[in-house]
Image 1: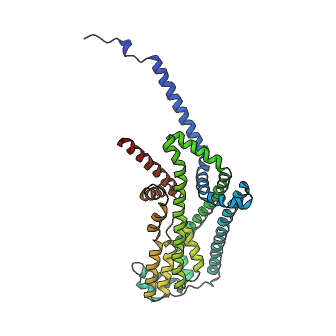
Image 2: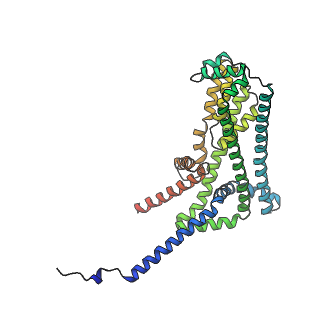
Image 3: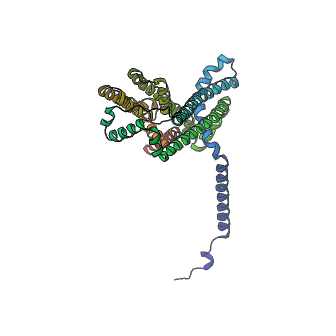
Length: 360
């Protein structure tokens, strides 16, 4: 066997140079991408929400524009201000009411004027938590100040959690105001933005599939939004009927909170559970059970209403959109509700195209 020439086993200098240059270029691009992401990261969520709101609200702009003399800028400004006012005013009212309630509660405890009514004997009959709830409630009704002193650390922790949640909610509202302003700008230059998005999709996916992705993205976002807002309104109406029929005090306020929770994709039982407990302590057992069962069904109605709304007008199976929306929300929060549905829809289209090519 002949010995191999060592020169033949060495790497080609040209190959080594090209390989190193490629690694350097890829590394530089990767580094630039990381730096770019760090720079734009604070704006990613508002831009995504602005894009979602723009796609959802644009039909309103096209309907209103002729009525305002065909002025696109004025129309988008009016629509944006309307949504900002519709968001800020209820937020301010709820925040002011909650802060006022906390202040009055503190003043009542300090002055000794706050009195807790004695619980009904029916409270002790509640399953699992009845006896402990009855004992704590009775103790508070006899000597509220002493009860607060005994559980001061727990109360402070609870108040701290409530204040943190309020602060987080207010920051979320501020983020949505920024997103609405971005949406207004995107709708003002809708034609240019749509053209740019379409070119990007075509560049990524080619003429046929890429050209469909832009319109599919808009349709998917609108369907998911209909599923969220439409179901939230229906769910709130169902819950409100139960509240008004049962004569629950403050039913309009509770209905507004249920609507807010439903839009935020949070379970209405967060607010309905305490109302159910109150019903068991103030109404007869039969009425309370009927009320609780009805509200449980109304609170869970979104689980079968969302599939009906989300799959309309698309040639994508409803389970694909639903799984994408739910999975996206679990992975990314509420914005994943839209992003997950869009991503999974695109993958479904790619899979469908691949299957068609295999068949040929």
